[in-house]
Image 1 (tube, one colour):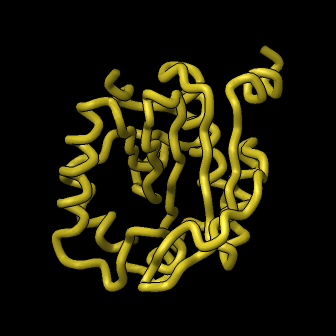
Image 2 (cartoon, rainbow, N blue to C red):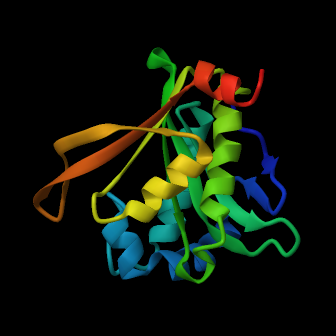
Length: 185
């Protein structure tokens, strides 16, 4: 199933990344804090990496195993960050991931975008579980996930490798039934 062309929230439009987004993605992702708090984004962010990422997620969206969106202002169209789901159809689940550019943090944008992605995951995609993880040194990401409705599930010790080191990950998850109950459905 292909992702919708756009998802609207009160303040945001989530839409497929476009080639024209590459300069903004390049500028915002070239931040030591983004690299420090994400598993796969390097610092410095190499020239051309934004274009490569856009091409890769566009290709993966076509096979139905990935849904990536640019997080943009609903009025101006300014790009704030990105959000996506890595979908595992055979397990009816997806991993949620996101980042927001430094100038736009602290406004609740990641929580708002995450709630919209959960609606999409449990609605149009008909998934049964969405999960996400963050590094122990990034509790702000945990607060984003909790505000979006995910529940803290526990720590997986040494679950990831970053810069040659084994890293613990704090996991959060939400089941479709929990999401519907919280929405009063």
